Length: 113
Length: 111
Image (cartoon, rainbow over all chains, first blue to last red):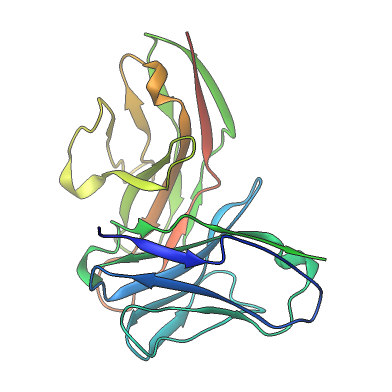
C-alpha cells in the first residue's frame, strides 16, 4: 500500500531533550516536506527536500533540522525542543514535478513540557 | 514573500445551499493554486488544482489573477462536505518549490 508513515504518533517530552520524528514513504517520491499545524495558524512548512541531500527552508525552520540521506526517509530533528514547538506535525511527499499533489502522513502530536 | 489568506475560520451552511470558501493570495510570480481537504479522522488530501480546471465532488475553483483569488465553490452543499479546507500556493519552476497554506476554513453543513 502506497503511504507515508510517521513515528512516533504521539510524544511528550521535556524542554531541551533532543528528539527525532521519522518519516518514510514508499512511493519513490523525490519531494518530501514537514509541516506543523497550529490552531489559527493553519499548516506552515518547516523544511522541504527536492531530492537526496537537497534540503531547503520553509516558512518556519527555526529550531528544526532535517536530513535526506535516502530517498524514502526524511527525519525531523529537534535538537533542543522548547514549549513553543508543541504542535501537530505532518510529513508529506510527492513527485518533484507534482508538488501540488502532496501525500500526507497521519501526523505526530508533540508536547514539550 | 508568498502568502495565502482564508478570511473565514468557520463557515456554516445549510444542506442544499451554495457554498463559497474564500481564498486570496499574494505572490510576485506565476502561482499554482490548489485546495486541500481534511475530513474527520482522515489525512489531508488534495481536492483540486487550478491548472486542471476540474470539478471534484461538485466543487470548482477559478483562479482570478486580477483579484488574486481562488475561491472554492459548490452549488448545493451536502452533509459529507463538512471538513477542514485549506487553500495552498506554490510557485512554478525550479527554485519555487516552497508550499504555503492558508489558515484553513472549517466548513459545517447543517442538515
